[in-house]
Length: 102
Length: 122
Length: 175
Image 1 (cartoon, each protein chain N blue to C red):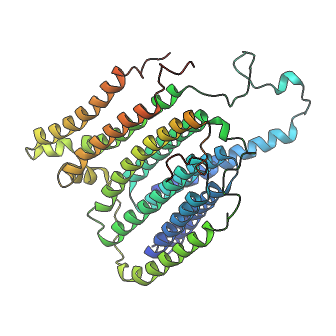
Image 2 (cartoon, rainbow over the protein chains, first blue to last red):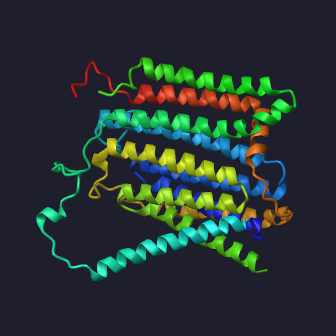
Image 3 (cartoon, rainbow over the protein chains, first blue to last red):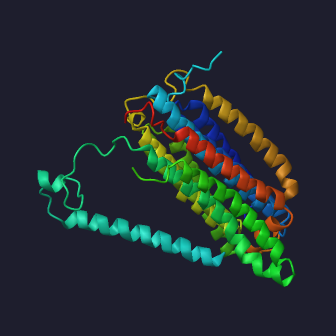
């Protein structure tokens, strides 16, 4: 049997790699990739805790399905924004997109 | 769990076999490159330009509509699995109506995409 | 006893694949290679779901993340091909070390919390390998009926919004 801490540790590590990707990337699509990694880490956490705490109620898995739905919607809209920015600015370097900076 | 171990074993053997075969053919084949041989094979067409050309945004919108209905499908699978159980409990109409509402809301999106003309190719 | 060791070995291998490819996603210079390793990472997460006996969720992970989201990102990369050349910097060039302490700090906090409080949650459950699809379907149709219908509205809004954002205006765009 795999201890619960292993799953939680894996999820924490994946989450932090996602944070690192989000903070260090300048390409907007790279940032979206980091966000997907973080959402996956949250999903692992939910499923693992549901499995170890309440193995017969699959609340964690239902939540994970909803998170995947949100992730798909987020990726669709986020990438559409990226394409729209690219059409107007000819690049997607987020350090140079400062029109809305106050 | 044991069944998945077989899948993992199968995957490992598959990957190892393909790597082995590619290494073997690399080791025993003669190596005489020429310009014609190094061209990418495009079903006999002569390739032009770089592979990383600007693609039409239409591709993205098609992929987008696919993603939305892919996610819809993952809700339909568990519903389809449970529909008969709900019918046995006398709740068949209820479960069926729920899914019909779900699909109807998404069909609105499909009609929107259709009316906007993004499903037309050209 | 041997099966237990096998399970733990498989977890280790899968975790190695997930974390290794995730690190490559965060650091590689060619953004297209990043995307391919992102798909590998998603596949590893599907393996973790199998280890947690969440079979339906593993299938959904492959279907949605690898089959849909990665493909969507690939199309978006092809739309914005000019950023893919490796001579344009993809990451922070100066202060690139700043995100690293932040990420490590958050990891330290999370790990400490998990190790301290996770120990109480170690209710070792019996091996249950029921197909989860039916149970999830039941939960979706009864207890989570409202989120289920709201998910469809979310998808509708995402579809309409993304089409509006991505569609080119025919009026002022000659191409």
